[in-house]
Amino acid sequence: MSKRVDGQAAYVLHLHPYSETSLVVDVFSRDHGRVPLLARGARRPRSAMRGMLMSFQPLELGWFGGGEVKTLAKVEWLGGMPLLGGRCLLLGYYLNELLLKMLPREDAHAALFDAYAAALQALAEGAADAPELRRFEKTLLRELGYGLTLDVDVETGRPVVPEGRYAFLIERGPVATRVGAGDTASGDDGPALSGKTLLDMAADDYSDPRTRLESRRLMRQLISHHLGGKSLQSRRVFIELQEL
Image: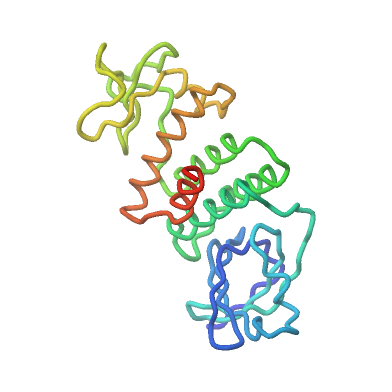
């Protein structure tokens, strides 16, 4: 059954050619999640859609159709978002790649949409990237059913203490490490983290350089685990640019 959707807030995640004149547009919408749309004629030089299908810009879309790929009927650029550039542009592609590889199609997550929009706005305004990325990553995992326990030792049930050292067990949470265990643990244990880092993450406070470093290391491990072996092109490019 054909269904029409109008006035839907959305962002472009990815574009790829379809035939000589059209595009398939992967969008992230607030009420319908990730949806593939066929933009007929969008590759033609005079297409009204061509200049508006921009990544990282707020759009209002309309589409119709009952199949797996819907047909894009309307695009309106809402404006108000500065263009991303440099490092922030690459970080934006990282957010898009996470959504493309981890979010099922047509699975709506309004809280994740709002977190994505907030992260883009902050990056566009030149905010420090660590808080925005960590908040988005945490929201993504929570919305997919992988919410993080950060303030309780999952083996003893005791509150995490700032001066403690913890290993983070994937799918479970923090466990106090033995004195002298070092910065890594064996088996499925992750890198050792300070209790302060865990509590800072729970409070979304990334002002401490050590918290920024350890939280990035932890989230990289968790994201990689839940990607199930899929690699991130944006992360590889970022590492190569840092090496240069």
